[in-house]
Length: 262
Image 1 (spheres, rainbow, N blue to C red):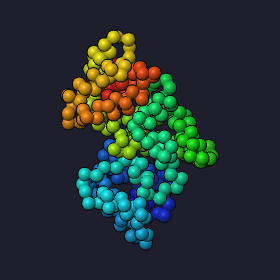
Image 2 (image 1 turned 180 degrees about the horizontal axis):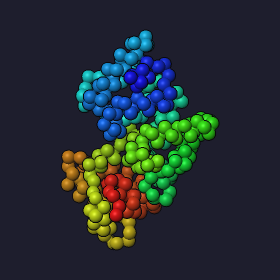
Image 3 (image 1 turned 60 degrees about the vertical axis):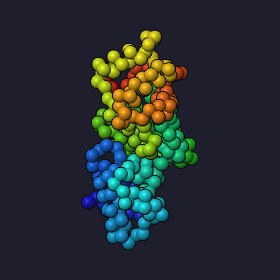
Image 4 (image 1 turned 90 degrees about the vertical axis):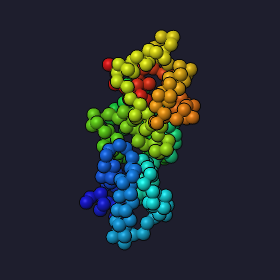
């Protein structure tokens, strides 16, 4: 199998890394957990042994941390940290800008300037170019185009040639990706519009920090299984990072709540 063969390599190309990720993330939920993660660890060990290669220190630490538990969970950047990937551009996101959900939201706002809810190919290319420059990496335009295409293959789950907020959030470490907790808090367009009107108490077309606080309190109360009210301040800070001068517009809040706009 190609993915298992790639694990034997001394250095893995970006395209091969994508094949590995796609193979082991069998349910396509954006992270490896449970059986997926244990299968990856087992086959990594077998592949390295077959190739006559020792596990790297990073791999050994990874196996020690996740190899004996069924409740582990990792995202794509965690995987990129242990595999010997050439020109590991995925790590630039973590190292340069995306160290937390708040950083991620601020970065998203910078590139989704029209509040459309997605980043298109050229915007994504500029995004990558900026990150590479901040990491003092100069690459040819053809390589930048290749990275952009790989990013789309990795994260564009609905194949529309654009990256949505939740798709792009796969770049965050799993423990930092608070959007995973909001995945199960979904509203249809009608429900969302009703909720937005309810919490936009002064009817000015946006929700401010105080109104968001009331909304999140109610969401936590209704969704105790998925949302922890003790994390309310963190949720609010991360979501408000999407706001425009303290104004959280309908389209931005819809991104968080996965609401389909009418």
